[in-house]
Image (tube, rainbow, N blue to C red; front, side, top):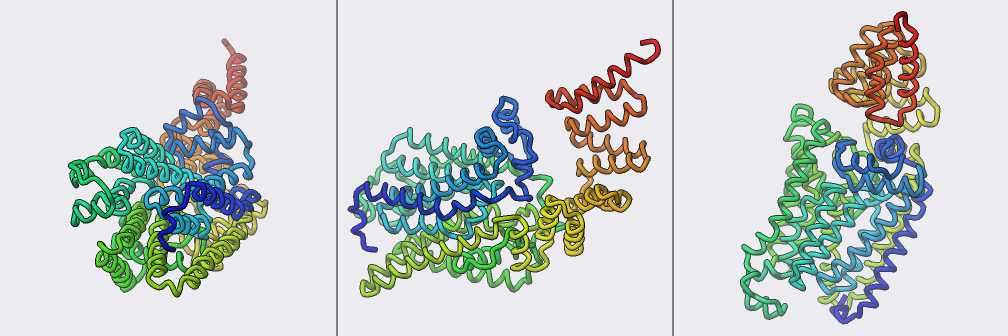
Length: 586
C-alpha cells in the first residue's frame, strides 16, 4: 500500500486494534467449549493441587520455587492459579483466557509495528497474519501452552517500551522495557533472544545501527535522527547488557530445570540434531505458506544428510539475498533474522523430548516471515501500481485462507480422540499420538482400547519410559499385576530416576506379597522425592501393618508437615497413635 498511511490518525489505529481483537477472539471462540488435553494439562491444571486449590501464600511460594513439569515459569503458574480461583477447574475459563491473550497479542503486535514504522496497513497485515494463522492454534487451544500466549504479551510490551525509549529517550521507558522482559522470562524462557532482536530492530526500523554502519549523514538527514555520540555502536551494544544478563540467567535456570528431559548425545547424535534443525527451518516456512497436515506431535526421525545440505542451501540462499539488498530493503534481513534467531532456543540442537518440530514453536518466529511478506508486497504495490487491485485481492485472500484453515484446525482440538487420530492420519510412526489416544481411552474407561494403543506406541518406540510406566500401571489396575510389573521395571531400567515408577512398583509388590521388596521400592522413591506426601503415607501404612508403629508415625507426621491438609495422612496418624496407646505398657 502507498505511504499515505503515515498520515492516518490515531483513531484509525484504535479501530484497527479493536477490529483485530474482535475478529481474533471470534475466530477462536469455539475453543471455549474444548476439554482439557490429556497431555500436560494434568500436570499444569487438573492433577496439580497447587493450581486447583487457588490463590494462597503456599501456592504462590510454590510457583516461584518449583521446577514442576521441567520448567521454571512462576508467572505462568500464577496465571493458572488465578484462573482456578476465578473459574474453578472448568476448562472454559482457562480456554477463554488463552483466547483473550492471543487476541490481545495480535492487537499489540499491530500497535508495535505501527509505533516503530509509522506504517498502518503493513503493520495491520503482519498482525492479522499472526492472529489468523493455523500454526498458532496449538498455542491457543492447549491450556498447557498458556506460557506461549502469556510470555508473548510481555514480548510485545518489552518491544513497545523499547520503541518508546528509542523515540523519546526516556530512561523510564528503558526500565519498563527491562521489567517487561524479566516478567516475560518468568512466563516462558523463549524470550531469551530479545537482546539480539533489539539489535536487529536498531538496524531497522529504528535506523540507529544503520547510521553507525552506513553513510551517517545521508541516513540522519533522511530520517531526521540525531547523529550524536550516544548513537554510536558501542552505546547501542552497552545498553543491551542488562537484557543479556537476564537472558543468560534465565537460560541457566531453564537448563537446570530441564536437565532430566534433555536427550543425551547417545540417544540423539549431534549430526542428527543439526540435520533435523536445518530441515525443520525449511519445513516451518513451508507450513507458513501451506499450513496443511498439522499435528500435535511430529516424531523425530533420522533425516538423510542430503536434507541437511538442501536445508543449508535454501536457508543460506535467502540469507544471501537479504544481505545483498541490506541497504535497499532492510526489512528483508530483519524479518529473516527474526525468524531464524527466535527459533534457535527450540530448534533442537539441545534436544528436549523426541519431537522433530512443533507448531507452538512458531508463535513468535513467524512474525519475521510476515514482515518480509508485508513490506515486500508493499514494495511491489508501489513499483507496479497497475497491479494494486491484484495485490489487494491476494492479501485479502491470504487472510481468508488462514481464517478458514484455522477454523478447520481448531476443529481437531474439539476432543482428545479427534486430536490424536488426526495426528495419526497426517504423520507416520507416531508413537506419541498412539500414547495420547491411549490416555484418552483410559480416561473414557475403555481399558482394552487403551492397552492396545499403548502396545502400538511401544512397538514404534520401546525406549519411552513414560509409556512403559503407564502401560504397567494400567495392566495392574486391570488385575494383571505380574504382567504390569514387567513394564514398570522396564520403565525403571530406562529411567532409574523415575520416582513414580519406583512407588508404583512398591504398590504392586505389596499386592503380591513381596513386602520387603515393596519397602525397598518405596524407599527408592523417597530418595528421589523425600517430601512426597503420597510416598510417605503409603510407606507408613506398610510399616503400620507390620506393627512398626514408631516408623509409621514418623512418616505420617512428615507427610502432614509437607501437606497439613492431607486427610489420609491425618487419619492414618490418629489410627497409629491410637494403636500405640493400646500396646501393653503404654
